[in-house]
Image (cartoon, rainbow, N blue to C red):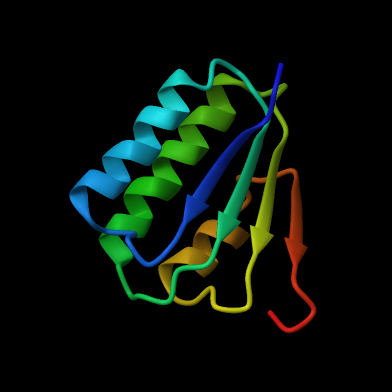
Length: 96
C-alpha cells in the first residue's frame, strides 16, 4: 500500500482545507501517512480539528505508520499537532 502525503500549511483552519484533510484520512484505508507541517498561522481550533482527525486515524489504524515532517515555518497550532503523540516518527529540518 502506498503512503499518503498530507500537507498542513497556511490554509489550516479554513473550512474547506480542514474538510479536505479529514476526507484524505477517511479514504486512506490504513495506509501509512507522511504529514508535512509548515503552517505559519495561528488557527488553534482548526489545528485541534486536524489533530483529532489524525489521532482518530491512528487509533483506528494502529499498524499504520505516521511520519511528521516539520518545516522551519511550522508555528502555533501546527507545532502541537506535531508533538502530541500521534506520530511514530518526527523529522525536523535543521533550521526548524
